[in-house]
Length: 254
Image: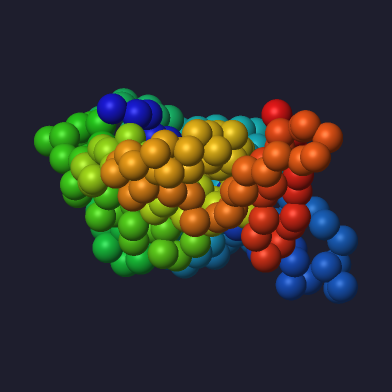
């Protein structure tokens, strides 16, 4: 079984923190300590967004000394009030053992709450935990369902993971054509693993087509739809394969 990857961090902490200042940049200079001060006041009054953002301050060490334990506690407060991203972050905390003892079962419980609310990071992580049986019985089919939900929202990790499942036949019938479609989507978002797998498809495409032309049924089913790879022999005696699609026209000698 091929290794798939989880979400890099269930929430984009730097981006979420910057929301405080982005709306005010034209009026006040950036000041992390003041941001933390006002988040603290709002959080103490029960504001879930402020609780979440204060957790981000402690997680990143922005305006305060970095404190993973306090980050966990503020995320927990926000999550209990229904903050979806905070739920995802709690799942990550339990999965990684950050600010709390590692517990995959509790991680999945929080991930499920966030994933069911549509959080794509949590959906990727649900797929990851089902794929490896972390906190839940191993179920590759269930993993693919969650990867597909996140992939359809544009999550590149999920797209790459789906590509791997189709490439190696994990939970689905092996299909290089569909695998490369998902790799392409992820590669266009600069996912390095997907770019590497797509490069492999370019490299191996000639061999697949030659096998298909020789009557290999599996190769015929797995022909890469993009690029279209054509084999040519020039008068000069050089052999080359030409890669064509609607974005490029590349010629490489072999």
